[in-house]
Amino acid sequence: TNSHPRPLAGRPEHTDAITHSGTWHVQLKGEKVWTLRPTAELKRQAKQLRGVGRVRVRCREGDVLCINTRLWWHSTHIPGNCKLSLSVARDMYLDGTRPSSCDMSNVDGHYALKAIGKGVAIFTEDTAPSLELPRSADSNCEIRECQDGKLVLVAKRRIKAGEWFSISDSEDESAAAAPASKRKR
Image (tube, rainbow, N blue to C red; front, side, top):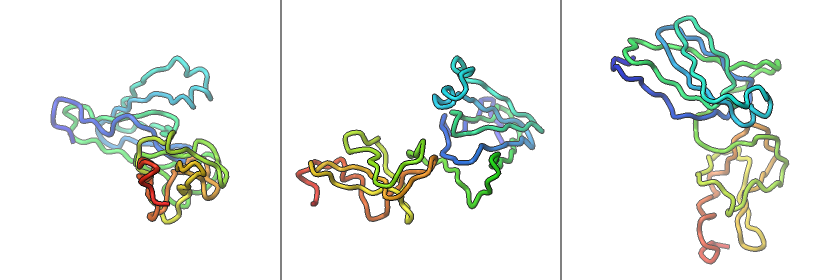
């Protein structure tokens, strides 16, 4: 519900870390406006999108939008004075696979763009993005110390494309920011 004359914004522009083909969204009541922009990966795959910037799609009652939210930057808003906006979304698996659980998250983080083999260095403390890695009991990465004393994030098992990088609860990526002289060895 948005009783104000100004639009009610959802999350800022983002992509989702998903491994399925995309999602379909049906607008049951009211309206929702999607602002879409193709990712660099999608522009490489579909050359006809190279000149495309932001596109707005206004979904009204009964409209269905099908989108791969990993390949499209997206944000949404509910228009001003919209009494009720109600939509439902479901994952699509166009390759015939069946989902075992939800593979979509709106948590900020990094994920593998392609499969990564066990033992491969993902990034070093010098090239690490500024973020806290998610924790998982089934983590796929570990922090190791190189011979020169620098820390590196390494795949501790095969990581599938679309899978989030994560570390176990006992590892501390903040050590990567500490000077080598202050790190425990």
